[in-house]
Length: 365
Image 1 (cartoon, one colour):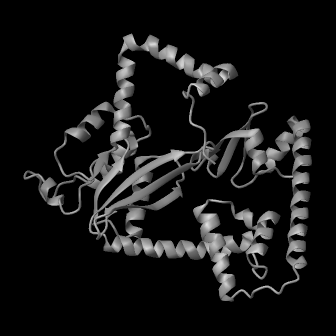
Image 2 (tube, rainbow, N blue to C red):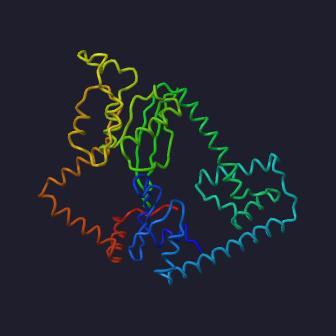
């Protein structure tokens, strides 16, 4: 039996995907049980299964039994759902009936999108019973229908609406950020900010996508250019906010606000100059650690450059550098850190802090 999903995250960590060199097209992960690195082709998990069978048979057998049990539970669940649907003895609405469409849209928009409930909620017996109470004739859409029909249709509607919004906006600012998840998969997000015709500040997410390879300035600039071209906003962007990582400084540090290009042409420059601004913009930067000189230069320039450093991120860097340079404050900070750690290790201390209202606020469900 091949292992996947939760089984992968239970027994393996440090997932990596290689896009260049001798390992191109391969992925690797570290076994949590023995720390051995297991290699395999992309989108294949058979090597994981073989490793567990050979090296950790007890754990593999335990996982197999649990997976078999979950599969049986799903089959029983499907039987229950079918029984519930047929037991009502009521003729169901057709797929084009106005009431069927109304309730299906209500489930999709209100429960799944606005409340953030999983798609599988529509296949739970309790939810189906609740919908039978609302309207016995309503046929609850299955997870497959939501995935293949409702989501693509909604996505296209939102994208068209966003493009119309971008077309109507006169000036747009973007925030750009990238990060990796615990499986070392890289993602980036681009958010659009603008003032609408009523004077209200608005913000919309334009892109939240997986980015292959390292977060080099070339890759970041290509994604930025792709998104700005897709929404036809290249000539409307007046500010681009990023953190102070060196790849962001290299990718966006020399971009100029549209319409101000002529102010950056030196009087001494000739038309035959070999200077290539695109080459400078796309200069690769392997590291992500910000350079103090580059950050300072980005503040000192009085030019109408497109990129601005994120204020909060810059403030955090200032505080971090200040703490590192202040030797007198290290002893009390160490004591505070030890006290904070103790609250996570001692139940008694944690309860006392909670009684004194000093604990982390409880989640509101």
